[in-house]
Length: 271
Image (cartoon, rainbow, N blue to C red; front, side, top):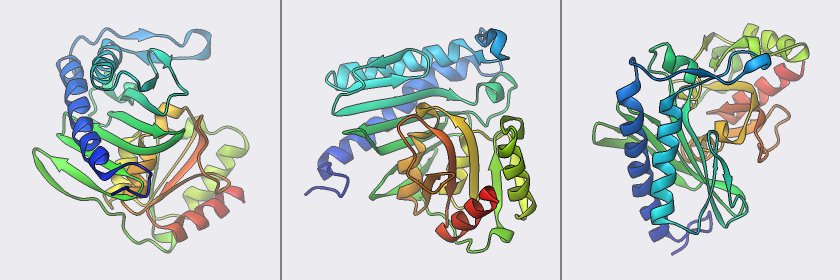
């Protein structure tokens, strides 16, 4: 039996379990450094503050080691250590600590993002928050689930047909410049409530039916690849600001649990 993603069901089951292993390995590298001496380095230079820690590096090394041992033919794209066979049939896309600013501030809103592409398209992904004890795992054609301390249940986005009722999030409005800032302000005026600073944890909250919409800009592939299958598996949708599928290199994205809400949001962004 083959899933709609093109992967055999047995393969999907094996990968599902492997995502849990990868998240555990990342957690082992990250948690001892959270709210501790994490070895902060500013890699931004003249571009502005861009933090990286030993947790980022150690978690990606741990994930890569497991992938190399289990699936040596697979490729990897990671934020910290670059590309290895990015044109392989299967490619893992990694952001070991998405939300490093939250991490160094002691806030448990950072996540570990692990995505899997098959023939260039994101087909499975996970969003892990080990300090809280959560892993959100999903596939494009497979019901996602929330795992909390060994318990699991399906993930499902919630209906929100009217933008005026929406709870939305973005990481930091300072990312929006010029016309993008005007677009964000229009959108913000059109919704019920906006929350800031949640990074990719906000994506998980859309999948869990707690938030309705997330908009971001300037994303890289490792910032969004993992979330696309999680959101889709929970019944939501991810596009760019023009309503098109998110490309292989990130960019401006909108994540929504309800397509009607997304369409209204895109209209507000477009003005």
